[in-house]
Amino acid sequence: MRYLVVIAVGLLLASPAWADFEIDKRDCVRGKGSVKISGCSRLLKLEKLDPKSRATAYFYRGNGYYFLKQYRRAIQDYNEAIRLNPRYAVAYANRGSAYGDLKQYPRAIQDQTEAIRLIPGFALAYYNRGSTYDDLKQYRRAIQDYNKAIRLNPRYAIAYGNRGVAFERLGRRKEAIRDYRQALRLDPGQRQSRTNLRRLGVRP
Image 1 (cartoon, rainbow, N blue to C red):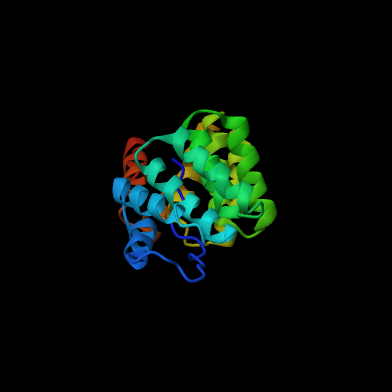
Image 2 (cartoon, rainbow, N blue to C red):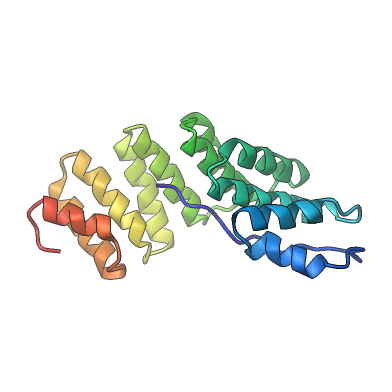
């Protein structure tokens, strides 16, 4: 499972000539689904929107499409965000997640790798790239990325859980159990790790 960056740099607008600008910005940044898409679309109609702000609005609208599972439309908006701001690491990361959900794994890996190049300490990008390697059954490479995500964020419960799955698929039962237990210590709501322990005949 891949995750999205949901909050990015705020909109940096100069003298917006839109009476309901604050409402549209709130809908674009904080709204969900069609509300988010509509708010961002209205902002994108503003002529005075500077390029970085326009990139941010495309980023958020892309998130709206992503959560509606309209991955191709999300990618179109992330493309625009990146065109306007080529160093927009979170847009690369989220576009990579969309490519991953479309099973376009080489593109997903390329985007997560670019996000990491731009922000070397980007734990989520490492986690998402690890998930893509998991999908490709490249479990050792997945573990390497989960290791990096956990090193950057030692409380990254889902990364422990996913690393446990990768260990288990490599026949490394002891390490898998250790990671499932750590995932549950950090987040008792990690139901998949609990299920995996029970399946292995181990008490959570």
